[in-house]
Image 1 (spheres, rainbow, N blue to C red):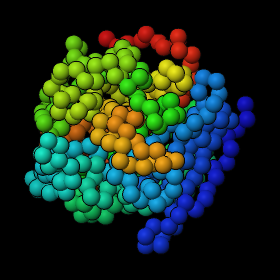
Image 2: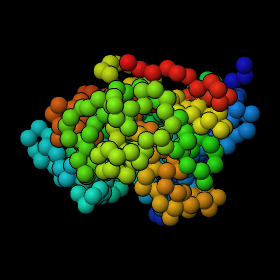
Image 3: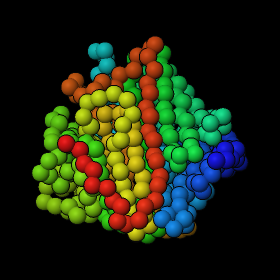
Image 4: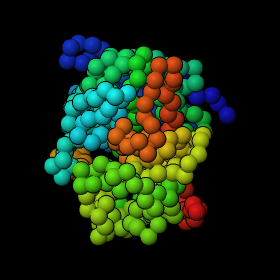
Length: 367
């Protein structure tokens, strides 16, 4: 087997202040191609072959840097400091209150979302190729940025392996106590046709529980079983089969936009498996995080013109974001998001791509 190709590096464009932005192309011997950029540590595109070997980009996004600079949907982005939502944009750490931007308001209830007004998805990282067919991005978030405490040094590495895995690995250190929940936020449509719905994709989530929310999509603090609900994906299930069911959680978010909770454990394990029956493309996600947010593209509205001028319609893509629990700074019973000096935050997310004939959907489930 031949070794992976060298990482290709190019100028992607310039920021409004004149700073140059680089883009890197990773390829492997099996025809996979990932493009990542210093702006937002974003996955710009991911090309994979289908069951007959035809390659296509399976992500939403933009054709050039100018488009990415308008990105309000977090397409492909690295999210931080805190991915997902924080109630009222407020939390207390070591007895000191902090106030963050309230930049999202589901059902008219303001909250803090994905790091604030200018989160990690909207800053310029510094990228360099690695020896393992990857790119490492570095960003230093200053004390007080978007209201968060502590000077935080973050490194995010994308690696494309010969086993058709795209690894996203994050680590971070701080000089003062802070909160952290770094998230990768690519929008996927495995068909390779962004004009189609993902409701015909087949999804398995290796999670027996989920986090119910209030109308503002903030977890109530309860960890509830998925059994007997439309949120049960412990067996492979067509996404659109129950998406419009009469169920409070679905009504609050207009479809799927919830955190699923894994059984307690450590190490990297299978979190999700999604397949497009027509193309045969399969994506498996493994992680070391305690939860995964499955978002079914409910808030896409056909108003954003993306790659090739396509306007991304509602439910034309899905996100599978491995993460800590939403609003965990305000929920003592949830896994702690606090990072202290001397500690290192780590988050591993692995996407494995294959292609299968329609009849080979596995029947595995969890118990």
